[in-house]
Length: 459
Image (tube, rainbow, N blue to C red; front, top):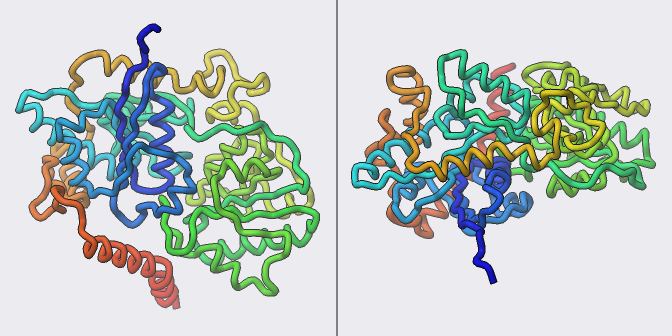
C-alpha cells in the first residue's frame, strides 16, 4: 500500500464573537492546501461578545480543541515552541487584529533571539459586507501575510486603500465568503418569508418597532404564508454587535400578540434558507447567502438607503424594495453583473461573468479559494517567513496605536503591560463565576440601563 501523501497542518483560529468564530473556522478549512489534514485549535477572546455554548452549537463549526483566553494568554501560548502552528487566522475586530499583530511580533522576536525563527502564516479578513470604516478597518488589519477580500469588488477597494497610503498591498488576496453553499432555490409550500434581523441595524427602538410592525402586517395580509423572524441571539447574549433593543422584547408588546403564521426562530442560517422563498433584511450578510442560492432577496428601503444602515452597499443589486411593494406581491430580480462581482451565485451559466472576471465570478465557488491556498502553500514551503510589518507603528501612528494596544494590555512595543492577566494558570472556579457575573452585569447595562439613560437625556 503506498504511503499517504497527506500533510498534517496545524491551524489556530482566534475569534472574539460567534460570527467571527464561524468565519474564522470555515475560512481555515477553505484556505488549507488541498493535500492537508487539518488540526484546528480554536481560541475565543474573552470579552463582552464571547460566545455562549448555545451560540457555538448554533454556529455548528467543530474544532479539535476550543478554549477561552485573554489577549496576553493567547500571545504567550503562541510564543511556546510546542505551539508551532502552520497557519494562524485572526478573526477579530480591527483593533484586536492590530494588537495581536504587534503582540505576536514582539513574542516571535524574543523567540527568534533563542534561535527559533519558525512562525505561522498569519491570515485575517472580514466576516461579511464591508460598508463602514473601510480605511480604518483595513489599516488595522495591515501586517498580516494574507488579508482576505470576500469579492473582486473588495479586493480592488482594499488594494486601493493600501497603495493610497504607501503600504504594501501584496497581502490582499481575493476569496469569497466561506459559508456560502446549500441547495439551489426551489419553491416551498407554504410560501415562506424570512426577515433576517441584525443586532444593531437599525439601532433605535422606533425603527426596530417599525420593522417588526411591518412584518406583523405582512403576516396578517398574507395568512397563507409562513413568516419567520430569524434572530441572531437570545436576550443577554452578544454577537459581533451589541443589541440594545432585542426583537423578542419588542414582540412582547405587539397588541393582540403575533399572528399565528409568524414565528421567531433561531438556528443555523443555512438551515433556515433551506425553507425560504423570500429573504428580507436591512443589510445582513444573509442577503448574500440567499442570493448565492438564487432565493428571491429584498434589501429594505423603508428607512432610507443610508451608509449608517449598510444598505447602500446593495445599490445596483436590483434587490432594493419596501414593505409596501412586498405586501403587493413584488418579487425582486437581482442584477447578475452586480451579484457576480460580489463573489456569490458563482459557477452557473447565468452569473453574467465577463472576460477578466475573478475566480469567484468566472469559475465555481470552490475555485475562489485557490489563490489563497496556493499562496499559503508557497509561504509554508518557502522557509523562514519575514517579521510581521504592520503599517501602524509608534512612528507612523504615535497618537493612535498605543491606545489600541493598551486595550489589550500591551505596551507600544507589543510587550505585555505590568499587571496583565496571568497566563500561567487557568482561572479557578471563583474567578470563572466572577467573570460570568461581570459579563452578565455588562450586558444588563447595555440592554437595560443604557437605553433608559439615553432616553432621559433626550427629554
